[in-house]
Image (tube, rainbow, N blue to C red; front, side, top):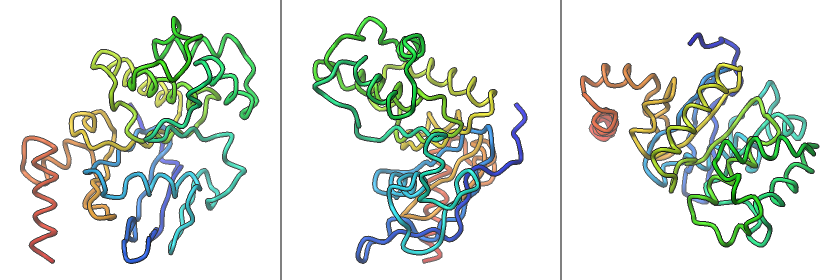
Length: 244
């Protein structure tokens, strides 16, 4: 697939500090239109904080983030952005369909056919009237994803979207994300699962709030002369340690 050269997300020495902790430390990255860009690294490396900066939920300590040609935070881009949080940001005492209707009201979506379309995508059509609190953890993740995609955003931020999702549905998600890319939708996804990262166009390997390296999975393996992404990540992390 050809990837457009338009930059949708850009950061310039973006940092966020919490006291002495540098959760995000002078990150520079560019994400192009129509690609899936993966933030890959262990828990606590700064992936979620970086995404929260990009969607405007946090203000940077230093540097800047430009999303859809606007410096964030900026409310003007919200209608074009979808965000699936790491923890389910849905209402436990509402049904699945009621959650969709609620989030639809925020985005101006009031289409029953659209509600059922996204429920079919996440394979929850038969649970539309189930109270969210009665669902399994994996099912709640699927509700969160449905809510994030409801308004057909041009930019999707997905924080660990496949945690607790069964392998068959994970494949279905990847197929749908690929179709979204083909339609010009840009996806930024975080994960600590190396296998998931293989399906991203490009990756930013993160450690201690910084980007260790960028490139496709094959480029990163070739660069480190390793056979797996996990080995590539460890080789790059060791290289940083040796320089420290």
